[in-house]
Structure formats: C-alpha cells, structure tokens
Amino acid sequence: MKKWLGIDIGGTFIKYGIVNENYQIEKRWKIPTLEITHKDEFFDYICANMEDCKEVNGIGVCSPGLIDSDYVIQTFIVPKLDPIRGSNIAKEIASRTGNRVTVINDAKAAGLCELKLGNAKGTQSSAFFIIGTGIGGCICNSEDVVYGVDGFAGEFHFIPYITDEKKQQAWKRGRVSSVQGLVNNYNSRVMEQQQVKYGHEVTALYLSGDESAGKIVDEWLFKIAVHLMSVTVSLNPEVICIGGGISEEEWFLKALSKKYHALCMDIFQGIDFLHTRIIPCKYRNDSNLLGAILKFEIEEKKERAD
Image (tube, rainbow, N blue to C red; front, side, top):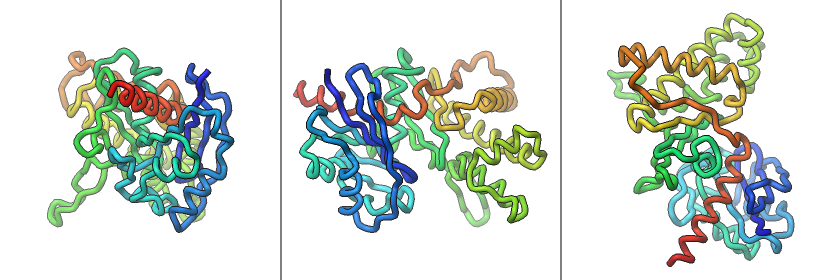
C-alpha cells in the first residue's frame, strides 16, 4: 500500500502525518514552531523531526501564505515563519530528504480535501472559509482548486473594508472576523487583569452568560456574516464550508447561520432565492494534511500525463 508523508507548517506547531492510499492518517506527531532566524536552520529542524522517509512515495507540504507555482512563499505570514519567506519549500525539503515534494497553501489544502473527500464532494462550486488566527480561504470548481493568475484567488482575509474615508484608509477584513480579531476586540474593552490570550477563553465566557463577552461575540458573529456575504455575492457557490477549531462548536454554526440569514433578509429583502449553504468542514483538523497529499497526487498524475 502506498504511503505519503504530510507536513502542515504552522505558526504554533509543525504537524506530521503518515497517510495511506485510503487517506487514513496512520501515524501523527507534531513539534513546536521555534523562533529560528535563518531558513537553513528552519528546514533542518523540519527535516530532523521526520521519520525515515524511505518508505513513503513522496511528501506533501502545506503552509500559510501566498505560494506561487514554483512553491515559493511570496508573502509575510507570521513572525515565526518569516525566515522561510522567499524560499522554495519543495527544493529545501527535497534536498534534505531525497523525496519528491509538493507544496500548497494550507487553506487551499483544506478546500481540496473537502472537495475530494468531504462535505463539498460532488458540488460544482464551493468556497472554504477557515477561521483561525487569520482567515484562510479557498475557491473550488467541480474538479480542483481555483488559484487565479497569481495564486491569490480565495484569499478572503484580504477583502478590504473602509476604516476612515477622509484619510482613505482601509483594513483587511480578516483582522476583525478572525479569532485574533475577537481576542483583540475583547481585550480592548476589559480591564488589563481580565484580558485573555485565546479565543476559546472569550467564547467560554460567552457560553457561561458573561454579558460583556456576549456582546463582543455577537458583534464578532455579525462581522463574520458580513464577510461571508462578500463571498456569497462574489461567487454564489453551492456551499461555503466553515473550518477552523471554532467550527467544531455546534452553537457557533447555529449562531453564525442565524446572523447570516438575518443579514440576507436585511440586504436582499428575502432569502428563498438564495441557495448558497453554510456548512461545516468534514475533516476539520485533518484537512490540511490530507489536502497536501491530494495535491501531491494531482501533480504526480499531471507529470505522468505529460
């Protein structure tokens, strides 16, 4: 049975998984993402924590950031990953392991997984909205990820909104609809000793009935609904799959759907004609690793066809 190694490079952890041809993760492990200043040390660290790669057919990698067709990270991501900006991830890992390597953006990996294996399977059009420290995004047709001319298609984090008309200033909408946006908003409105580090701390307060947290979470849900409306009117896909850790919370999807439908009623004066569905991702935390392997298979098939 064929096996591949999947690697999910993140700002907090680097996750590994041995995946078989039935897309089952047979073994998984992770290491913390360290503050390393040089790219060579960073890739040495990634490869030193792999297991023996001789038994795998290849390595599929996913990472945040805009990744071009040569597998080079073109944009700033998070401080801990900045040393690898401008690096060809595939070449760096291949040179250290001797394996064939492919690379895909992490949100696009999640979308590809859901398209081929998950809740978007069989759809003609789909979008993926991954809520985390930022907002990851992906667009798919019936067959594959839609990348756009620069690989920037689906980067929903960067949808702008005006913050000051007179100064002609705008922000990335992902800054307010992400989990980090929730944390930042909460911390700006409470005493210093009440401030939190993680989004789940705010939502736990909300679920316990805390009034301040309740208002802030309600505002956050509205911001996400507005963000989803931008996706809907731009693409009108069959489904928008919501991912990220928060998507595993049943209350969250119910509350978000209610906000989204209310916004549709307000803007469109109706909703019966709108068939875009808001649904959760199926594979959740495994979607990145599985999508990275699916990307490897797609590229391998293309090479054989050529």
